[in-house]
Length: 125
Image (cartoon, rainbow, N blue to C red):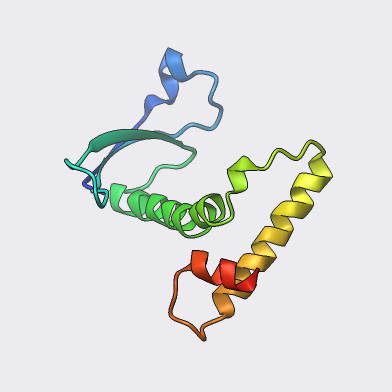
């Protein structure tokens, strides 16, 4: 993350009156490169926080959030194609999600081959 800007005291702004407990607004400039793509895109993401803290600590919290997103949800989306499942019943969707996470944990524990998760999934199948 390139820059974190915290703006405390916006809870009185009329545009944000419906956000109860709002203490600060963060703007985070992210710069990332994607392998195989030209250019390095930069974007600004905004976050609403229910606490006030120094920008360095809030940046750490957001990095931890994105680490979880990148390490678990991305794997489920791209290795298991989780977003393509169209299960209609709520309990069935929860059950399938639990099975995919259990399978992912088993596949990650298999360290016999130094291959990608996708190849290990195919091997396990």
